[in-house]
Length: 364
Image (cartoon, rainbow, N blue to C red):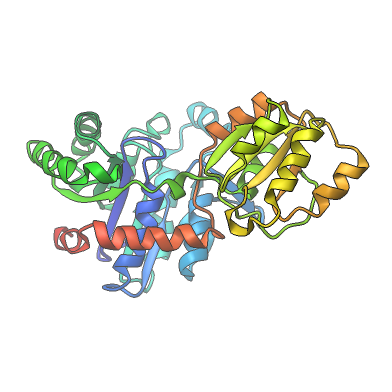
């Protein structure tokens, strides 16, 4: 396997701590030093099918943003399907999986000056089929950066747990990046997290301020999650949802909630609330609501549907009730997608300004 191309492995203390955000921003920052960069996510858990191949979602994102000039199947060699673990435990084939990762890395690294490797959770994820992040990093001969959420006590405790497994596998940790830190606490957390990590022999490589826009879903993302039916045609499916209101009150009282970025969830037969929302949107432009979800598979009468079809914001119909819809929206895991141009630009800037890329390169 290629052992000469510089590489780094991005791990995290848990899922959704910001590995993909960090990876995307780091590739952009590293391109200033290494114009030809490769990317690989050796073990992926969330995938989509492209030309009958199961490709990790993050791989699709990276290739879309950076045009990496490498087959997607090599950047995403192993997709953990629902029955993957059961099959592995029935007939262990670890050597074949390791060879698959190594060969994929060789192809990803071909004619590249640097390769960024993205993990799939904390250090132990994948242990059940003998491909934990720690074991994969060792297989690739990569040093590790750990991403964790902002704070002092809890993040450092969790980093210490991950550190133990990486060290057990003989993998060196370059340092730690704290993500989603409240802006008012950045100086305080930077000072004391630096001290705490230093006691563990680790460096703080960056502190990324929390940006609510990165955790705000788009209407299109919600539509896909709910398998909802669109009731109108609109070019505003990329509207970001900043707040959610369940329309269970009288129309007069509901009007005070129809503000910028609000997603209204209401039964499809609450025509008084629907019409009030339609009226409030007129003339608001970009300061209007994000969208409306009608629930219970209750389709409004034809006269109301006619008004809905003229609405500029997305209006959709879900078969589920208001509580189920609100719960799904609340629990939705928001991932950056190829079409999220605003988020991608923000991520590039955040990493460039708040992560010490020079220190990372020196450590390699």
